[in-house]
Amino acid sequence: MPDLYRRRLIWALAAGAVVAPAYALAEGGAEHAPAPKPRPKAKAPAKAAAPAADPHAAAAHAATPSVPPEEALGRLMGGNARYAGGLASHPHVNAARRVEVAAGQAPFAVILACADSRVAPELIFDQGLGDLFVVRVAGNVVDDATLASIEYAVIHLGASLIMALGHERCGAVKATADALAGRGSPDDADTKIGALAALIAPAVRAIPASSPDPLDAAVSLNAAHAAAEIFAGSRPLRTRVLAGKLKIVAARYDLDDGRVTPTRTQPV
Image (cartoon, rainbow, N blue to C red; front, top):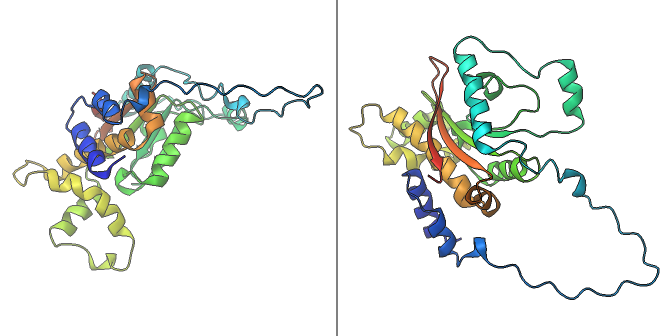
């Protein structure tokens, strides 16, 4: 994908534009291109050996979404309502569940969350062992390793929902804003922290200085950018979204009241 077009796609998605079908056309209809004609099969020898077992056959069922995307989102939000209301049920945390998931996993949702110690997805969504596939990195940013982890959870484990979760008073977003304003910490010299800032900076720069709460606005936009990057950066995930088999949502977690608020779904 050309870098310029990819950047435009991410910004359009983060702004809430309906661009997914246009993107497929821009790639020459690659998403819907007819499959190539199969080559003629060679005749098998009279005493052919038994075919080797397909290593992916056992995972075929797990790769099928276990719940529709809307139901997966409903489960998350229902669990968050229990948590925020002080009524968490702490499901799937007993010994029986541990034994059950030891044999295999089929999480219904992927959560891309900040590594902040106050943002623990299994707790704030009141879920248990095997329910969520959680990817955590400061600033909930998307790089190749993050995207690969998300792809694995959807393609091989059958998750039908991806949530990019930002949170109130995010330290990574604030540090990026401070660095862009020339107030960066000298302790960050000779570290890799700048790699995070480079991924968060577009959201910070896009917020007007006149915004009532620039930091919180940047937090929400940064999550929207992450959701858009997941959609734009992965053809297999994009194909599932366009087919209605996968939903990608950006959301914000409130540290004070414990509530998660979805802010945008990609594509709209």
